[in-house]
Each structure stands twice: as C-alpha cells, then as structure tokens.
Image (tube, rainbow, N blue to C red):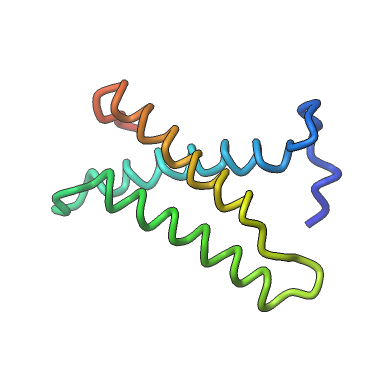
Length: 98
C-alpha cells in the first residue's frame, strides 16, 4: 500500500499516528463486540486479541513480503492505540456503539 497518498499530519511519524488512531477505533469496536458475549473480562479479552493481531500482522509483513518489514514502533503505536481505547471505554462508562 502506498501511504504517500494518505493526508499528511505534518509530522515525521504520521504512519505511527495512523496506527494509533486505527487501533483505538479497533479497540472500541472489539470491545463493543465482546460486550455481547459471556466472557468475564471483556476489556482484557478484546485488548489482548487486538494487540496479538497487530503483532501477527507485523510478523507476517516481515516473513511473507519482500517490500514490507517488521516495525517495532508500529507495534508500540498499535499497543498505545489499544490503551487509548481502554481509557475512552473507562471514561465513558463502557461505551456502547450502535
């Protein structure tokens, strides 16, 4: 994917900000899904699965692609995005998306 077509946010780490934003939304959606289940620790379950997904995607980029590489800073941005999602969920009293 050519990220040069993405709008510039005016920083040298735009890609990481996109990761953070995407994984924040991903966490909110994942938690909303888990709210409908009988799982006891919904925030932990959804956060763990989403972080694991991000790690798997980074590893697959390294192993299956010749043009993409594993980036630990992408994984960190993904993790921080999940934490931001958790904070939003906690501050809004278990956010319910319709």
